[in-house]
Image 1 (cartoon, helix red, strand yellow):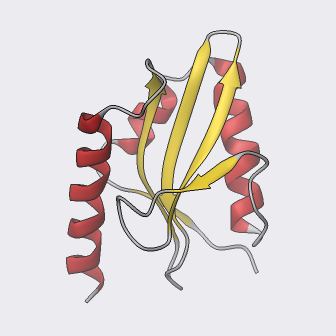
Image 2 (image 1 turned 90 degrees about the vertical axis):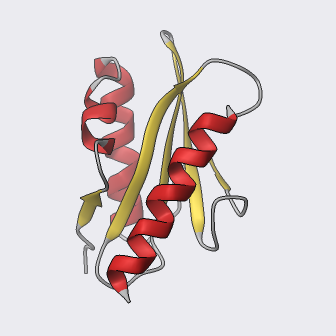
Length: 109
């Protein structure tokens, strides 16, 4: 069974701002998650919340991230998409994903 994807807040617009090659790769990786597989390059983001992961995409135009959570039965929720500008993920990106995760938890209760 393929789980639907739900984009939280403006995360879909954020993803649409990726260059075309990075967008295609993002779609491919999210499709794998929908089918219950792991993305090719990912890491757990426990600082944001339990079960939150980050898909890592390297493109000629830069490095991109998709923060999502797939532990809920309803859907895969994409919390935040962004271009990474530094080695360490910016606190503003982590804080935004955290607040969207908390909002999602409240909504699903």
